[in-house]
Image (cartoon, rainbow, N blue to C red; front, side, top):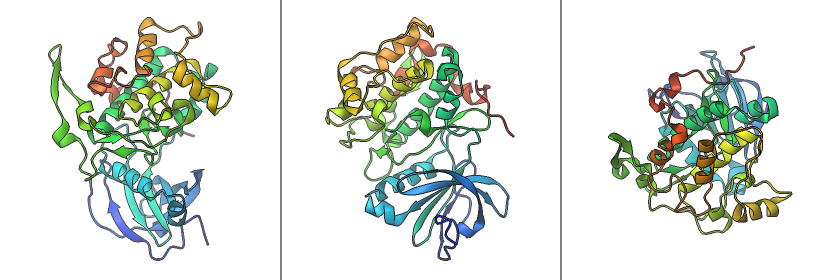
Length: 342
């Protein structure tokens, strides 16, 4: 029986097995037959994602099953391998955990943490006005900034931040997912952190300069989601880690107002708005001056003047809008939205 590659693959081979903190613990045989499909969670152009149950432990996972044939056909092999590398090397509370990865002749399998709350996008759609109160939006923005800070330290640019790629853990905390559009700054695959970290001091507090980890890296790929694409990508000038801070600005705006700031009637109109218009702020819901300030600074069209372009995440975290955020305690705080377990 063909279950989209989830069963009937006798030549599945072990790749890696990880503990809950993404550290390799042991080699053991694992393959499609180790899991029972519960239902499909989603699908894309090169594969599908299933909710599966591991037969031995009865634990639930999200299993991404990627067709090698389709990846080759659509030239997405490098994207899949980049995603696996990020997931395999990550150990962060706001980035989805990879537990197993293996392959058969026809498929690549990524067995990841199952986030019971589903897409953050769907959670937003159920809220009044499809938006959040400012303090709630700030909480989730802070968790996203923390996750991006970690990715940049690893030497990766995310490049695809949007509510659909943010998952809600059963605790209500966010987890970034879908790293197939991410780009690594170090061609040798060593990441930017070991040689690139600079410690700075602002008001006596040591901070990590994440910008230095990917300071000289630019890519010319035209990727991203239409309403989240930044000016430098549209203009084809190449882009750096500043692209991620632009998308944070779009995300904060969408969380607050239930729409993105530059959406037009079509793709051309949207891109025209991105290049020519400044974000406007509706009278309702009311937001603070500091909130508008950080959005404006994140959405500066000149990437070299954009908030985060000089010292990365530390610069964003120091904006006064985040002054009441305890960055080291985020994961221990109760999130605004906690999924109901039924």
